[in-house]
Image (cartoon, rainbow, N blue to C red):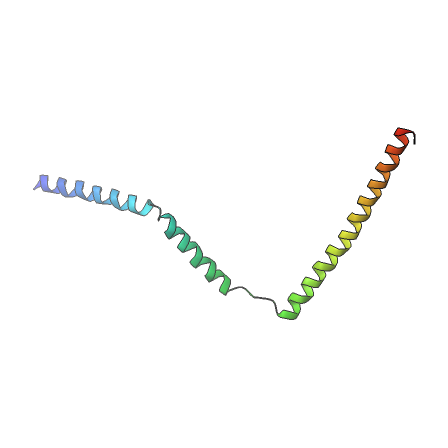
Length: 94
């Protein structure tokens, strides 16, 4: 009887080890992609999307800032170009 108890105990330990290995086993590559996509769409359902007027207003603000910085950077670029031209003209003695 003692021998069969040991056999059951050993088999129980082996099955526990298998269960631990299976639990720690990572799902396959495509399964992980599927899980990630499922989570992403689930999260997107909870997003509060802006209304069309609010989106257009935000877009207009962004475009205005881009235009302002475009003018500033262009002015700085032209200024540096003129300064470089002035310095190179002085260096050549023209």
